[in-house]
Amino acid sequence: MAKRVGMEVAIAVAEVVGQCNIDMAAVYPITPQSHIGEHLSDLVADGKIDAEFITVESEHSAISAVIGASGTGARVYTATSSQGLMLMHEILPIVSAMRLPVVMGIANRAVSGPLNILNDHSDIMPQRDCGWISLFVENGQEALDLSVQAFKIAEHKDVNLPVCVNIDGFQLTHMVEPLEFPEQELVDKFLPPRVPYATLHPDQPLTMGAFAMADYFTEILKAKDEALKNSKKVILSVWDEWAKMFGRKYKPVETYKTEDAEIILLTMGSMGETAEMAIDELRAKGVSVGLAKLRLWRPFPFEEIREVLTKAKKVVVTDRAVSFGGPGGPVCSEITAALYHEAVRPAMYNYIIGLGGRDVPVTDFVDMVSKVAGDEIKAGAYEFLGVRE
Amino acid sequence: MTKKSGPAGWREVTTGCVVFRPGSASEYHTGSWRSERPVWDNQKCIKCGICYVFCPEGCVQQTEDGFFKADLDYCKGCGICAHECWPRAIKIVEEG
Figure 1 (cartoon, one colour):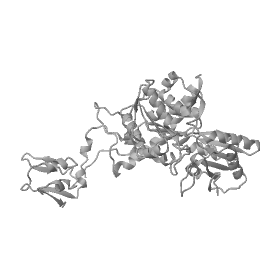
Figure 2: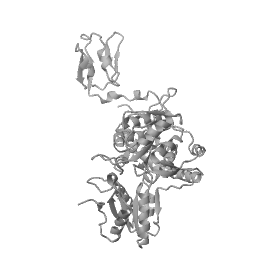
Figure 3: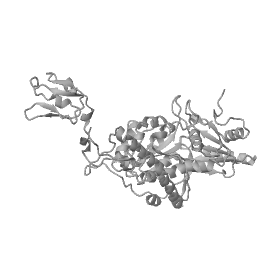
Figure 4: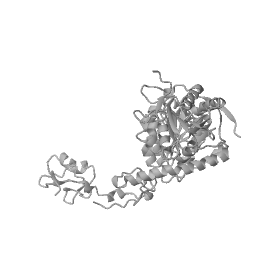
């Protein structure tokens, strides 16, 4: 078994990406992602990994540079956060349309304005429909594990899609946690060299990123949608393989005491561990409650969501972003849609929590569930938790 | 309108729409977009070649006698050649 070390999670993510035999990385600094890029650049400059680190003038350039490198068949990595991700937005659907297995770490941070550097999910939510596989982690160990898995998923011959690993900014990136690094031999075994579908090479000229008009556009987008949906099979098999090699199991929807629960609370990202403590407190008081943690955001795990949530009478979804003037939180809106056609479905409650780094302690989760248990709030509506009137 | 030889259904779309056959764009005749065409008056043409230089489609060609003409399979009728032609030898006329 690998040794556990105490390390800041962002630095550790860079370390583990360095174990993945990457050929190239292009990262532009932005808080709270910067330590990932800085440490990767150190690893390259110190000759610890055999890769190119391209310094770029913006995130738009970073994502564009990794597209070019990935097109040549290289294994590539980039990372960003908040405004940087927003600047990449224009290019993100092109990466997935070109079916390039780019891996990106996102240190989730609130989008301006007002300017705010702290954690929520308002940066990733606007990227929802860009055709990327999108994973969320709950702690530092998961950030490491999923960063390695991301390459295997992305590069699988039945996937060929970009993957982003969402790591809550500060709450995770800047924590020093006890972390278990996978042994290099095992990483090499788990992650063989990339076998690209096509490469840019003068010996065999080809075109990537060609133009398509109305006569083919629909077919091309349908093919992309099917590719993303089909990637779930590969994701599940990669998680099985990971469990066999490294002992840690991953599921699209993780559950904690949900089997007999009348109320299920749902979180995505780092708040899951705090919510677990609230579940224990509530259970001690006799409240029938459990916790579901959404790990796989895209492709959306419809079957697993239905299987876990239809057993409950009430579902309390927490969102870390707002769809302004819309249905409330994007996570709740998608879960509600996933359950709509079920014959028996739970009442849905939506709390918008932890915006721009606002702390959500155990007591807040206890309060949310208690209000729902006591019918103090209306089903189908959404509420900004703790907003001052 | 040129018949294109692309995928029949979505299942036939190559991964990432990679086009493995180089030069296949030449099979797409953009001339079908045209509503107007350039017409050269060789009495005025001084064979300077500015139309050849400025054609964004690369479809203006020099003929053996030194004058110029557009390959109408690709000419979109944008009119840049006529705009640039300072001896005013090119007229843009509506397609019949």
